[in-house]
Length: 319
Image (cartoon, rainbow, N blue to C red; front, side, top):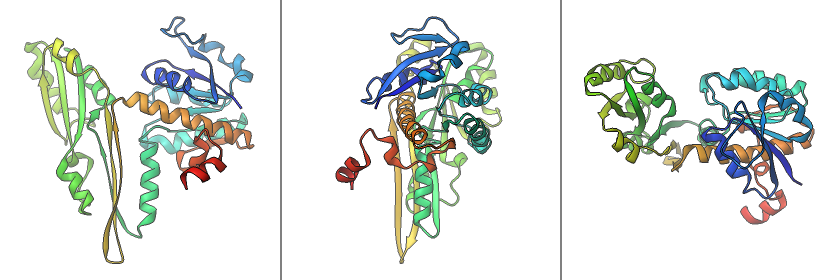
């Protein structure tokens, strides 16, 4: 069995998916679909406008598109023609995205796996699993230390900012409170520091710092650090995309305190997200082969469908 795959979009995520597919024993990469005619890759590149004509040549289409506008505008049309896997990460709008993709994929007799990656994704699975184990649980999620791409983009939109990155850093005292079962008063605001590193002219820095600290939905309500640095220092020290975090769930059982903790430490957020997305492509293919159609979240997919090995091999090795 060889799963024929393709990619739409070729940013950091698309490049990570491309690299990961080429290391899979049961997948081949048919091509990359892009608005750009030339990409820095050896993989065949096709115009995204022609994608429908390749429907019979592709088993799984990876949607390596942005969640802000690209996925809401393009994903349902693609799910009507292909089985798809996406990394849609707007948590509040996931139910609406699920509903739209379910309708489109079902009408096309396809499978659409939504919101893969690590949060939503692996963190979502752990939150559900851990909270189901305790009759009454206290659960906290922490993000970082890592680059917040959305907050970094918000910094770069400020007039006068030449380069910028924002790190989300969880507070160690908040993490310890969660581990000890005292996380009820821990919120995302009081549990995280937002650290900003900015390149800008000195004459603009006071105004820029004020705009950062007063930016609603991004920085208001958080402890914020703003550091202005030279461009060469920025290039030297802030070129990576690390991330990670913790899901900590605690509960009482028989008078004893118990904690389940799931932790990720990622040197490259896009590469790890891509790896999770690729694995869920295998599940999408198997669900389609089993006669399933419609949308599936990570909560609905058994883990064995992600693995290249058979269920029998996994039972012998991992149980």
